[in-house]
Image 1 (cartoon, one colour):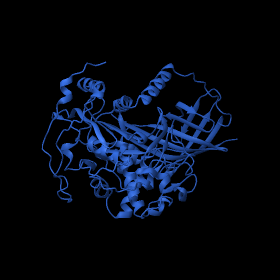
Image 2 (cartoon, one colour):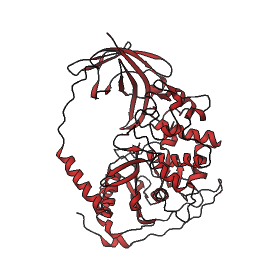
Image 3 (cartoon, helix red, strand yellow):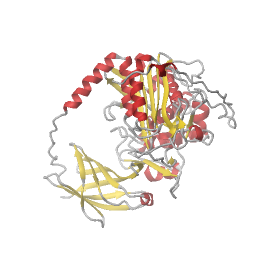
Image 4 (tube, one colour):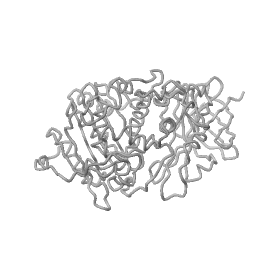
Length: 514
């Protein structure tokens, strides 16, 4: 355990608070520059751990906040928002939220629902222009707004980042939908996390309101909730208050944009994020407008498809929900992107929310979140300890024999947005999976996992589209057995210096040869 430095617990730093104008031109003039440390002495061990890991250079900075029963009980930042400029992080420093943007976007959509401008049961295509989703499995009309929100629409894995030091520029949402708006499973069949789905939700917001996604979120979500340090992307007015993103070697990452900004482009401070969490705990803070009824807040945390389990959790309307996380029902979202890790964690029955932000990729935000909750809830701590012990024992893995339905020769095609590519696959009884794309060399599929109905693996090959020319990539294949055919996706997955650059998917279908 770390030693306690009691002097640190009683220091409060006061700076000038600028009052922000509500007009668009002056909206960033009341940026808070105050560092307020709300600190409860019970957190001293966690705090000492954070001080040690930040001082040791494991991460550039961490910003932490916890609230209980409508009151912030800990709010503090550690380390450097910008190492090169020697800018210290504060609770009002803006961090990339990555996928914690999704609950914000879903909240925006629910505001339109409450105003009667959106029907969750309508097909998303009803709200589009000329570009429409293409269904290779199932019916596009069954890809409803609600199914897109809870990742059961049939859309697949997708992200596409464009860095300022590269020549390539972000396409329009219409072009992204034309190229990658493909349903590879029937809507409602399975849960498959899709950033493109939330990009589409942002696009719907824009089409319905006639405003940009960024402007709508500012006027209808951020300002009414008093989130004065929250923005879509790093706007110029907020740029100097935003934490620099760092890669795993500790070097700054260039600024970037995404073709699906509503999925992960929001920047926010830990102070604003904890207040957003408190709003979703129905705390009714006096300086927050109740933009959603308690009924609709509850709907976001409970309206999922029970037949489409997403990993071990359910995905509601913008929130992951675990019915038994160390003995409690929890509502949460985490995020990870180039140079960013985020966690927002709610336990509604306990009136508790925790937020942790970091300007690099690290598991620390998740560990710190668990430790904070453990200090407040002994039952959570005991269940976490037991679960950790069980995980440490390991499990015996019994390899499933390859189902006989998979064994044999398969032939089909990959369909990209601008061409078709012939493909052959051979699955042998000895466990080897071979694949050959058109005139390319035959290769093995590696890291294969499978069940009685799906196959997943990674292999080397080329999907020759212009979008894939930007950098080297590997291919992922995920196919589902449907009678005598396999169908699903092939995804070009590229990294840049160890962090995500793009995952771009195309449709694949194979039929078994007699």
